[in-house]
Image (cartoon, rainbow over all chains, first blue to last red; front, side, top):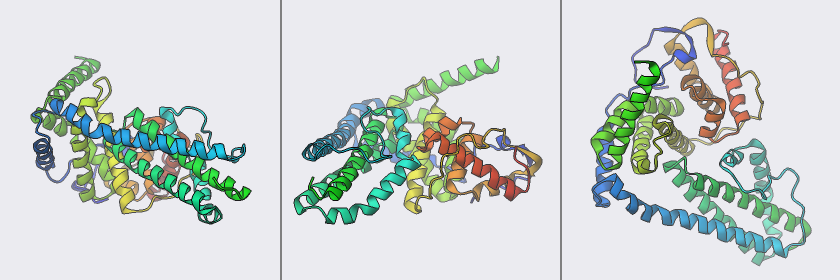
Length: 194
Length: 186
């Protein structure tokens, strides 16, 4: 680690004695202040509190756009599923019926989910090729919309990590992606379109 | 004044600064920056292992915090809130710089209890180097749990992994530190 401290020859007998704080080698505040001032010039509100409604005007549509995208994809997936004969879920696929909670965010990084997703992604190309062109286009459009929504939501979560709505929407997008991939797999193995 | 009273006073003082910063007072926000920059930069540096990248992450953390400050709940800890932002920023920058390392299987409760006590005292520089050489996942979990005092659940949530995965990473970190420092880590 390229640290910014001089050599610390002190000895410690527990990791808890290590300091969490390390001072940066230079003062970072002037650049932070300049960025804040720049943003204030762009948003000519005099204070952060006054910026609040302005920020809501700019951020809220992005949330809504992501939410709308998720909703439209979900409807598309639902329509696709309704065209398929009753299917049973793939063994080991994550449950999607229950409403997601804040804690569901952990499921996104769960190794079982990651393995399931990786397996579906790996076989996706061959399965897509087996689908009729119209169904393939529909799947590609759905997946592209889901991935755009994921990127938007992850970007917003970077700015507001504690936002429960954003976390829930992100979990929804992962679940939607799994539904599409699972549907592709099932439709491909059944030799049917979506 | 007791320690609890001193902590209450500090929280009140900080809440006052947050309120002033929310109303556009950049001097108040600068005070908050000065108060927290060390721990935020320390976290970013330990996660990225690159002083320049850690400075970028620290700046971005405080700029994002300024934007999101009106939504901050003063009942919760500003320090934890800033750490969450710093972790998200650092993870995003790190993902851009290098591919994600493979995840560990859950190993619930496998050797994660303990105080991270060293059987023989070791020089700070040597421990920092050993921590810096750990694989990313193990290092992240260790830094948040052993250095910053977050519980397994809190650290897992902050890193966006399952609690079992976080415990497995801590188990791995303990094993690797033991090997690298040649000292029992209890």
